[in-house]
Length: 450
Ligand code: AMP
Image (cartoon, rainbow, N blue to C red; front, side):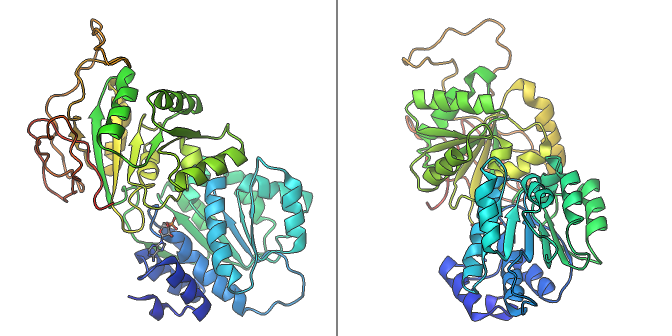
């Protein structure tokens, strides 16, 4: 299928060409015609599938074709998103498409001065992309008029529920007209999501471009078992030996993110942290620097990273496994976006075994276990000397590299011996449904063709 057959207007076709999109992604091919036909939508799409354009393109076009009944420019599209970062990304796309059709988009989120938002709303906007809490604030203060909303989009609805926004969403819908076009996008389906869909959507078309709860297909996953106290050392080793250009690293806590950032800097690896304790301006600047390639390692917590769209991000590392198994899927979905391949590695200490089990149960397969080529068996202090090993230090790093996989869709390529003194830079190509048995030491998977 090509974009030509989707009925998009010349202005949007030119925007698509400028972005370099050649063919519609599956969610775009399925959702765009359904939205044009006027259906409510319940869409299950993995992260990075192009779902933003799937709703932004038809909405912008339909909006521009409808004649305004009066001259008041109050919002006609409301997109609710879980985080500020996702708000920024969706509103960028809305602005990009909308500008070509003389539509204005703005972003509403908490943690920043409300006055500037009020002034933008007063100047008149067509599209509002908002996080639920701050939007409700505006609605209650009557600084936004939601009575003319024609389209309601819930983007990453599962995440909004995880973050406890359900009551805010319900309150917001009370400000909206009853007759409206509703679109709900979610990477995973829980009972709660189905309930919300039943309440909000009117005889929706159900679109699913990938099985829910399954990690993005283009991502090669691997696990490294490592003692907790040696995770930082292993991460620095992987980054250096693999000559990784950029990596997004997840920690569970904000404190952990700051601490790891400091340690990486101490290892002379350029790193920055992004989490909700940082001001919005620092988060925006850090993200911009990472996108420009000025920062090599971005250390993030789940909430801050949700919705991050970083083009060509080759590596994601789970420095700690997430508490909630679904977050693993969201985390690794930051790489392998829009048809590119990505690598997601998890550093797992013995205490994290229950979390790993929960993740593998969710994925319905076991993740390949690997060991790192030439990673010292004993801890090395930063002066380069081996540290004496503590007695009864618990977990021993594994010698063999791959455990059997029940049914594993993505496996690292059968590892070759690492070249002496250097971790190989050849990528491990994932293979579906094939067992790997790595003899000898495997190598950190590296990315193809960058
Ligand atoms: P999303 O799932 O909306 O966050 O999009 C993920 C990435 O895919 C973004 O970087 C988009 O710019 C990109 N993208 C969206 N649609 C296409 C397409 N048809 N072809 C190539 N890339 C796309």
